Length: 118
Image (cartoon, rainbow, N blue to C red; front, side, top):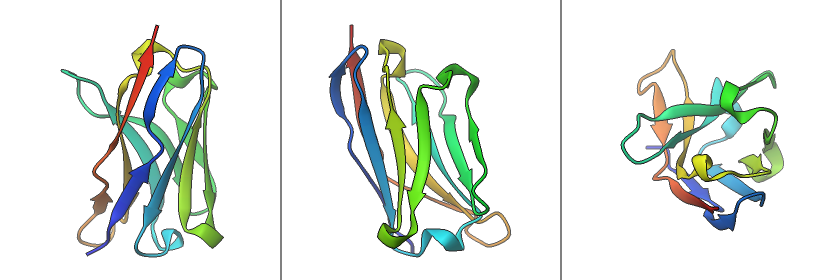
């Protein structure tokens, strides 16, 4: 069983920044992609950012260039740098390690809370 652990969440004022970290118990290079998702109260979980094994990235339209996903193989960590945070970014942020051609298809972390005050 692969463990995925997020950290770095917290309370920040609007316009502030946070950096989330995601560490997996297996090499992150072994996954097809690593992604950050978020779920706000009463809403469905949504994709925030994704980075593929080849280094390609994808972002939700709502991010508008404020967030950056990156990885450090030496630290086996995926990061989400979040700048100019807004109250609507308040959510629990989850890290997902995907391997669509193998069962199980994905491993999820427990999530880290991000709260942005106005």
